Length: 232
Image (tube, helix red, strand yellow):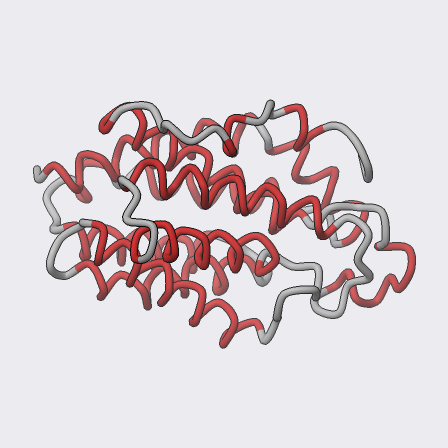
């Protein structure tokens, strides 16, 4: 098993545990702006992914990530499966040469491109794009322009995603089921943006374990900021 795949498996275990811990919270959020199944769907999908751990361990990093995507597409119901899983599948080809700063940026950018193409959402539409877009742009800038170490770049991306989640609270939704609620969706954070943040936080935790703690302080805000405050 390569070091890249080993890191992926560690991250998947963390994400599995986190999404199960947050399952009821995500479902509660979705009950306010959607059809109350986001938490359950993601928990089922990530469980199906981690059940393939032994198979993933024998794959290259791009093959393993592609398998994660195909599994999410087949196991996660609603729009989340094609959006999360399909975007991961498409972006996985950027990792054919292994995982490093350059391919990580390429993966993130390809993921965002496919996500917006599939869902048609843009920043301000009150969707997961409001978390993904600032995270990807921040990560790219931190790596390519600021030349930060990967873990510091990821920490900044997580902080950007956290701010993106907060940004969704006062918005009126323009995409998805929440768009049918009109003003009733105002005051609630988007569940897809929130689950995206949880995934990114666990990726950061994995990177910190392997590469050392981030030296930037932006992304160290208390998790209570996600659960408390406006919209909850």
